[in-house]
Length: 407
Ligand SMILES: *Cc1c(COP(=O)(O)O)cnc(C)c1O
Image (cartoon, rainbow, N blue to C red; front, side, top):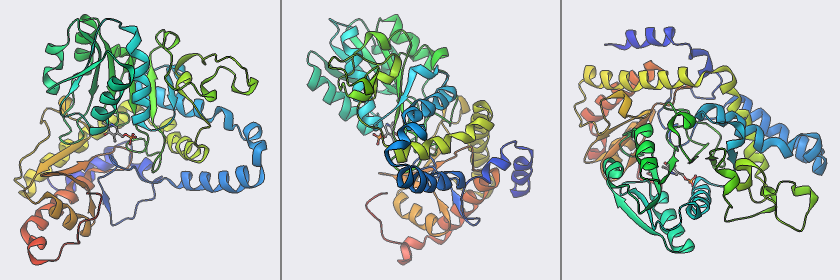
């Protein structure tokens, strides 16, 4: 394993040309697309045009003339293809946190007499907070947590809904989604997936898994832009039986009838509520166009290859930090996390050296391998730079930038 071999792997990869669509400085290795995906030139152009032409010139006419009304559905259809869902089973609205609240609160009445929502103790904080908030709001519901690998054995007749995050944001460990979904259904519970670190990164097949509902981000591996809205999925057949907790006019079947009576839109679109964030959606739609030319399976294969290359490169250059990420490629996401007692300082030194990953307390160095723009040679260069930083230990000589509020 050497740098030359990484360059050869990039030449053989079908995704090399896709990287050119991203506005990444040539001397930067960006391994934080799992936190904020980078900008594509086409997105910058589209945003400028939406602001100047559609808002600035078209004004309110743009609802009709620029297709603003259908923008949400167009984004949803593109995401549906990536996650193995039908276009009407997905919508794009609010933040992932709000989407999660809506989905859990709406599903809960489908399992009367069951008083538990089951999730894992190491779940992402928002999943824990929101789940507790749902329990406090809807009543007769208690949150029970187990380690992620115990969910399947804990789920039983007292569980209404199981909520699991597919890929762990800290370690990158990936759960067996079809198996856990089957276990939940066996016990008569509904299965909700948080796919924040999955869509666009690892194979997702919501129909194949039999999932009941799911939520995810668009600003991570889908590169939708800072603060881009979340997406949610409710499987067909289920959506028509649930009532979203927030019944806003944009979730109505015909918002511009201004009807007195609420009539929910068919499918997942009923989870929309107020006027959508047009500028963010326009950026997201432009960002998702890249997937018209990329087979999601080719992208997730490339991501798996990148994490494997990074692990090989670490060994080749002699970085011997503990790997927190599972070595089985089917059990990890598009991410590798390493442990170091001074992880925050190491990461700040890496960023100063042109390799951007991030740090999750207390001791994790996190490297994301977003498939549309990361190359094998980036994985090599990151490993080599990490090796150099660990040797030079600049934080011991006061040469590391101070920490900011976001690790
Ligand atoms: C990033 C992330 C979120 C983000 O939620 P927002 O409400 O969009 O900020 C949710 N869940 C998981 C597992 C995440 O990693």
